[in-house]
Image (cartoon, rainbow, N blue to C red):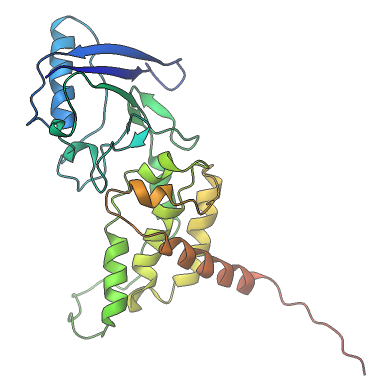
Length: 257
């Protein structure tokens, strides 16, 4: 089948970008979306043109490297699917597709469809870990974890940090990503000692990076390839407020006699 692409081309973060039209006349329905772009890049390279830059690694929906906007939707039209797991059978002959990078101040474009997501790394460094003494691994049953807590923690831990939530949010908020990282540690006994400190540090770093505030719209959850729940955002806000109030200096008030 024939697919017409309008791809965002941008030389670097300081250059002006624009949409460039390409025709892909021999697309197989069995190709993944990235395989289709591979074929396009082979044709461009053969013509001496610069191939389209896009990020990828495992191509199994695990690493979170791939991701861009397809016809206005982060990761494309299929819910719960990364771009690398999106197949061309979900499109039809003659479709025109518009490919753009994530749009957020905190995600500057590196080239074409690639953005710099190192802001996520700095949010993790601000508290997305558990401080423990090194040594032999403890017995798995030594510390009981309620089943409901374990399930919620595992659901949050599925976040792959792709950035689709930021791209879909009108405020370019990273609240879903940050809350998933806060929740999957804070729900477990091992993460309790640093629970409030973790939320405080990561939320503050999120603001420093230039991400917007959560507007509770839900677009982030709708495009998340791992279907992370926005319930995590409420949990993060609660932990942050507890930590912020605890951090405030105590003010003594005088009584009446």
